[in-house]
Amino acid sequence: MSDEEYEYDYGSDGDEDEDDDAGAIEIENAFYEGDDCKVEDPGRALEMFNRVISLTEDDDEGENLKWRFRALENIVILHGVLGDAEQMLARYRQMMEYISMVTRNECTDSINKVLDSVSNNTSLANLQSVYEITLQALKNANNERLWLNTNIKLGRVHLEAKNYSRVAEIARELQEACRLPDGTDDLPKGSYLLEAYALEIQLCTQTHNTSRMKEIYPKTEALNAAVADPRIMGIIREEGGKMFMGLGSWSEAYNEFYAAFRNYQEGGNPRAKTCLKYVVLSNMLALSDINPFAAREAKVFQDDREIMAMMDLRMAYESSDMQGFDRILQNKSNKILEDEYLKMFVERLRNRMRESVLLAMVKPYVRIEMRSVAQELNIESDAVEKIVVNLILDGRVKGRIDQVHGCIILDKGTEAQTVGKEYEGLRGWCKALHDFNEHICAKVQ
Image (cartoon, rainbow, N blue to C red; front, side, top):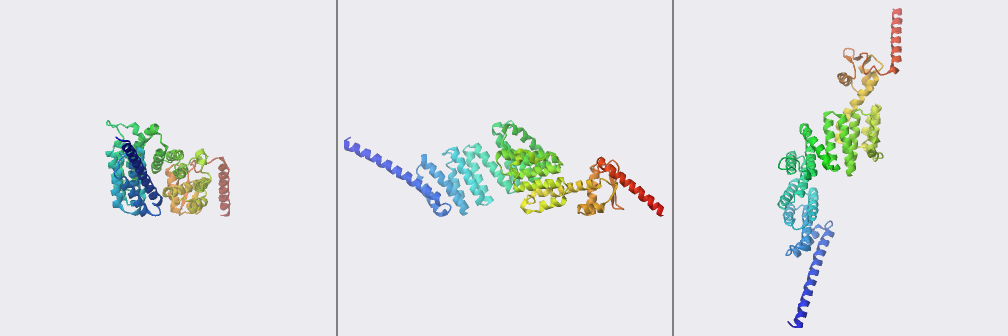
């Protein structure tokens, strides 16, 4: 071969390199132009991302494949934003053909971005289709961990939509996937199994399935020792607290809510504040002397308006200040009654306060009119009678109701009467005055 031919070949290689560089620059420019205008001009962005697809369609390797995969991700999201469900699903199927050709991190990031975006921009039916495409593609690609994560997300979607039968199916499928052939737990998948239990526990709470809840809950405690994930355990312990609240086991509920609060705090979950409110609620119902705000974790919230309101509510509760209690509840800026769960127990708290006020009120007496108690509590006499009946049944008052004369007659030695030496003198005076009154009446007659 002549020198001229060598020079010609050398020159041709240089031209090819320059063409490759120019092509790469064109692809990159098209992608970033689309990225820049996808908010203000989604139509133009779609045009640019489709151009990236055209420029890379003959190359399934290297950087070109990555550009195409990222462009498809953006195209799917844009079609979702624009409400074109048919194109969104078609391009998503195309994108999923490449998940085995990119790294697992790239695959995970893109799928999560699509799912998060589509969750906010399409109907539940279309979202379900996106999840089905995802799960099938991940199963084909043997990407089990991402399959588990995606199925957990789908379970949460159905839980929020109150599609309880689908939640139950998904929870069961997840639990089976996290077990060994002999039926024992697959410990390397412990965090996924804990998530599956958390999903079913939330389902049990919403469907009031206490029997199933009692069956699952101990399993999570055993797993927690091995997994110790505060993000998941916060959810589980909160639902455990709600289970015990439903059973009327206030002290156990307090312990669970407090554990949930600490887990949420450790995991940086903003739900910690809401759970602290539930800690205070269960603490009041348990008639506990423990101050939940004395804990180091709780002090972080001591200047928060909503938490300060709960502190004030507890103080009003402890001092049996009915008017102050109601005033705090009705103050909309405190947001106490905006929480439907808290709202469920407000009347129970009021009844507890009424019990406390009633017990204090009848302490000096052996007989007291229900009308007087009703006026003090600002309720009807019938409601007073119900409270007294409950206190008698609980053994906190030993006495009886005289319905004919509309009064409460207390036996000696009851909780309402044995209240310390400070009342003994008063009783003595009352008896002396009573005897003196009878003596005067007899003389007059």
